[in-house]
Image (cartoon, rainbow, N blue to C red; front, side, top):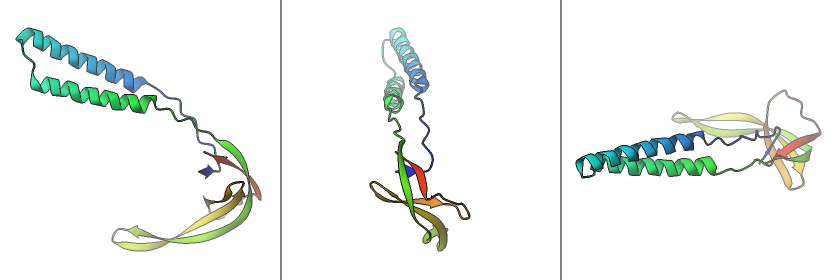
Length: 130
């Protein structure tokens, strides 16, 4: 994927994971306290602990899966700028919309980027490959 601007590198925050850890520990503690008091497990409490543990696992996957952005700088040479028509569904009918497309030649081939009408695009541009 190419773009005119670099993609911001988002720092990973593990706050959600740690909050879910606290919630799961609290739920398990309440379930164990109920067990020691009554001598049997409440089915709803055990199911709630299982669901919270599942949510904790999903939170861990999201929190600790870090995919850094590359933002590799590539110089592109302007090839063409054209208007493209596409049919898009709008409600129950299809409408034709016009888009401005700028094509740049990069080492991997030709890249089409959506552009704005009236904007001037340079012959040689810095593009970011992610």
